[in-house]
Amino acid sequence: MIAALGSGPLAIDARACTQIGQAMLQILIASRRTGEGAVIDASPHLRDTARRLGLEAELFDDVPVLSKGSAVA
Image 1 (cartoon, rainbow, N blue to C red):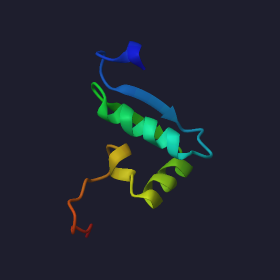
Image 2: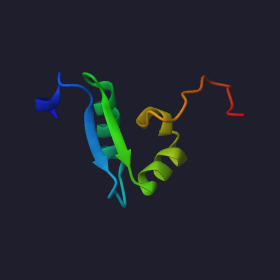
Image 3: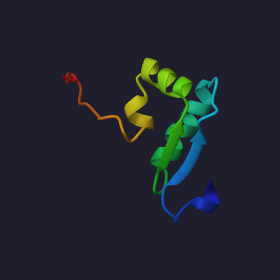
Image 4: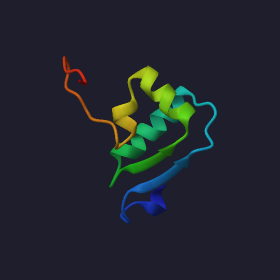
């Protein structure tokens, strides 16, 4: 990841992800917050896990970020 810093967002291919743990989720979040960020191409399993844990907006660009108390219509 360090070599990719400064050359645009890091592209992470997670399309083959079939299970993910807390440590890897933390690494993915850190990668999104570091340098120019990261774009994660996620598998359905990763997306579902992120949604269930409330991390979908944190991990994926195509999910609207809501403020507390907001709801999606």
